[in-house]
Image (cartoon, rainbow, N blue to C red; front, side, top):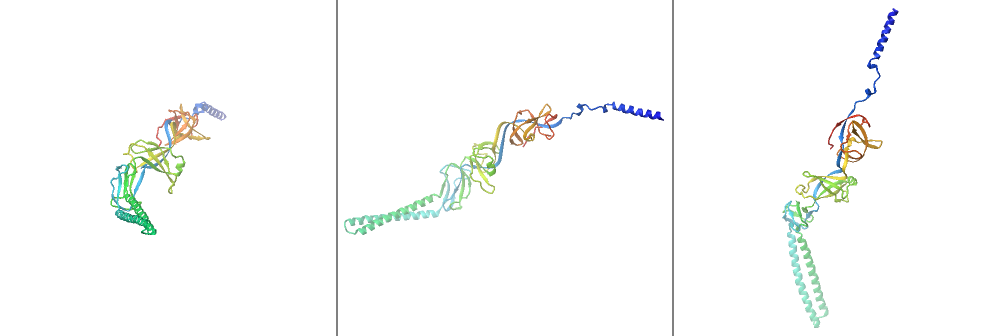
Length: 366
């Protein structure tokens, strides 16, 4: 019995020793602890022009745009130019019929004629009385009275002529002429419609175009000023590059909006009509030949910004100085070159020197 137990324990020890000799019981080698490369997405560094812009919607106007107003009471009898037609400086734009004005002119002309006749008679009588006084036929008092009447009649004649001249000037306001070469933009009154002083008759503007934009006061203070570069986008052409020419000195309305004017020097009038809306981008900052990476690739740690660059299947940390950001891309100042690829995924686990499996992912940031 004792011998059987000894044999049993001996066999157990032999079995354990044999199991320890198997590969599963050998200590692991360092190579078996190496992790698999981390799959990451990468995008290539780009170069080009990048801008920081503020987008607004503007309206096309004439640089010189006026409302032609009535200056007399009457009726619009004729508008020689239709909407959209060109007119030269001095051309008649509006005829106004003013019968009351004609009657007043006729009455004042009659008064002037009467004053002329009366003055001529009184002055002739004064000369006669002066001759009689020289012959001592009449007294000096009567001669002086005749002279005084002559002088008064002359003053009355001047007053009547001044009134007639004033009325003739007003009567001339029944015709409105073009102050400069331009185009009739809109009829605000139809022929046959009664009018009065101050009532708009039509809109008139020249051929020099400009964009007018209502800009919020905070955006004005962010850097928009006279001379700021602007890109005007239309539906049928490439963006037009121009500059701000005028900023209103006063913010208006509950939104505190400031009017900004942008001259539009273009030879394509058929593409830009008065009243059309256009996209306006104010260029606050601009950099040409800039190196750009996706915004998603930038990491900030310890007050430093940088990116991970895929180099020989390893992630290499590069410090960068980000600047202008636009449409998902950001300009950087660094040693990166075209062709370098930056990591844009799994950035929370990527470390400098880590093995990675880069996957090219070219995408467009909007």
